[in-house]
Length: 620
Image (cartoon, rainbow, N blue to C red; front, side, top):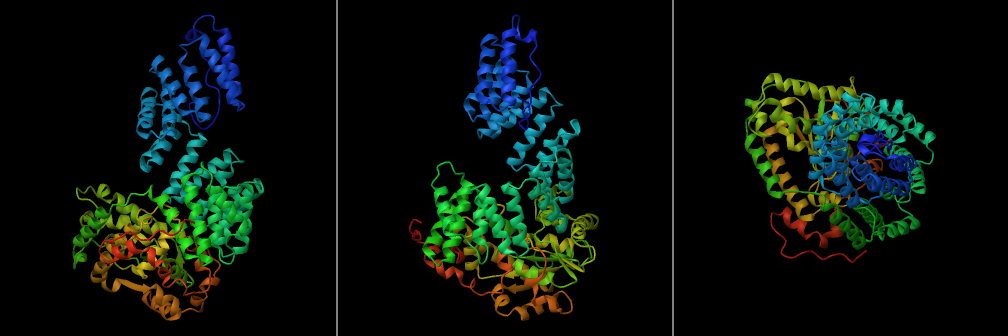
């Protein structure tokens, strides 16, 4: 019954002095309880601890151990009470504060949990397990820099502390530090060769560094190591889908479901596979799962997205929109889009980077290696990247997060009293070059030899002032698409990471309108640095638009450019399935299928409020 939440291990036996005289019987019950806990027999562990405590009621450590077992059984209110009794008996018992923090965290009381974990560390500053537990809590609260600092402190105290190394690896993955994640997960797999989850995370880190063959080897090793591991089959399927092998991907997705029938993400992936989709039995199983009262909200929304996709394939537009609406209503409870705040950011950006703003900027890097492909999600950024990456002098980096990371920390990094984006105007040449070198190092990990490396993070359109400061010669490609189709496409997709505005039609319309306002401004001030590509033109006249792209980059035409769908490379975005299909026009005007339900989106795009709510689709 450890201080840490990661492993069951008996704590030091309570001393006879602490237990009081005549504690032999109590000690025997206590030892029996520890053995039962280690064996996973929680009922017997509780019985033994209760008997020991009845004989020695003031043994604070035993009370908090009882709380640990109660929490393992999900009896959180009883667990919290047991830990509080331990603290009442011994306020200086750091383990009790640590365990109470874990129980409060499990109960959704994040503020109180953090206070208890910090108290445990105040009492015992070298308490590595408490540092790790605090790191996990901070990660859940999206305070990632603090979480990483706690992890690193735990590892300073216990360099071989595998759970802390695993958590640090996950944090590195979250901020796309793939080299750091690789080092962490290699250390974990060296220490625990049977840790399949660590191998899967290691493969993800290798993919992030574009070392795909090595990642494949790791995936194969996981499947061999744990042939019945659902996650291993899912990961293998995802890789095959990225490579364009729909049949192989379907086989492994179904292999994952055979081993874990409630794996919601596998159903959604099947629904999105071209030429495959969900079978009748799979749709019936999804409907059975949706009827379960204990199904987690994230799984519930994922399954609704899957059924929406299946119904759209069957051209049952009412049913498709009904499931999409259910999915978005669930996910909307976890988003926090502030229309006023977003509009204020757009207006501040326009004011900060007015005409002639470049005259006051330092010269960052003269490198032309970065090519920024940006625009709203679902506007064709993946398609554009795939065309460019089929040229032998271009490498594709996918969606990099370096520019937003630089933006997020810029004011603090340069010591500015002004927030972002205004603080960009305070950059000096030395710091601009330092930030640009940091970004170029990331591109070098993708390719050292390519003349250009593309970065297709859509939301970089919010940071074009910063990009102009760091890379005044970089090429920028803005992907445009009918905003009504963009809105519907965003509404029907489950993003890997939550997108704050995408789950509500009013918010989608407002964000699209703000984006149009911002891009109108960038069009006026960036001039020839930015090329605009319309999705509709790209899918109707692909060769003409591909030639515009290549000419803009100053590259010679290459025969591969119209065979990009045959390229043996990965597509690592939500568009992975679509981009492997022959160019198709059916997605143009997609919004018309659902027009009667889109009144809030359409009204917001026009800058007005809908006068009446749209009709609700029939209950699916």
